[in-house]
Length: 256
Ligand code: PXP
Image 1 (cartoon, rainbow, N blue to C red):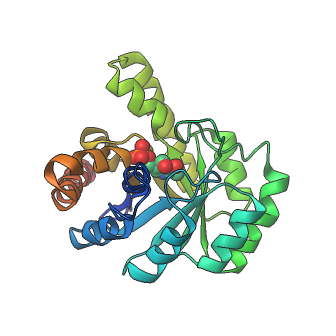
Image 2: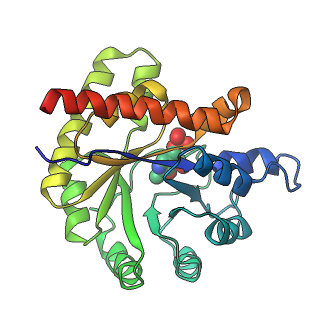
Image 3: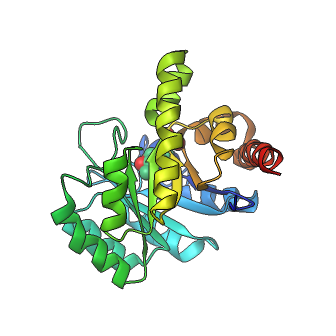
């Protein structure tokens, strides 16, 4: 079976900005964290410009685009305002996510089946601008097939429910969520989509999912920024990279 030899790591720096915003000043700087993550081996940087600007702000996104030497993945809700900002920023990729103001984090996948009429022109404009569109969806066959129909080149599978179940020790639920991810990744790959995954990943779950042949990229934030408080961002990136490489090596051993 053919699969990418390596798997990319995108580091999400939102929560460096969360910490900065707690005092309203300029430190810690998410751009500095992004540069340190890249220096340690991150393949790209992800940041989510939320409608309420609770962490990343417009000038952070502009500075990330101007200052980082690796691809920028701009996460955003599908709103006219965000479309305007992303077209002006020209990131490497845009990941469309659902957004509700009151949520603590992005709680579920985008309903591309329910919103396909609204999403179609949105995706087309980003495609036309040469920005790689990724849709953050759950590993649901109908959602995946609609993503392909909408001509998004990439999906990102929402791993939150699986990671929560693993963390909470709910083995049956974790196994069921994992089966959904495995099946969804296969459906997506056969529909011609590039498959990414993210949300709630830590070293162990990243190692597990890196062994899925369809997964080309993981986007990881909260856990890594928390770990960085104890060991630094460089060490955290290197440890995550090693975990992902172990997962990939296990895949190669299985398919050799
Ligand atoms: N991918 C997407 C699309 C997200 O919205 C998020 C959270 O902002 C992540 C990945 C990273 O999730 P976490 O911070 O839990 O690692």
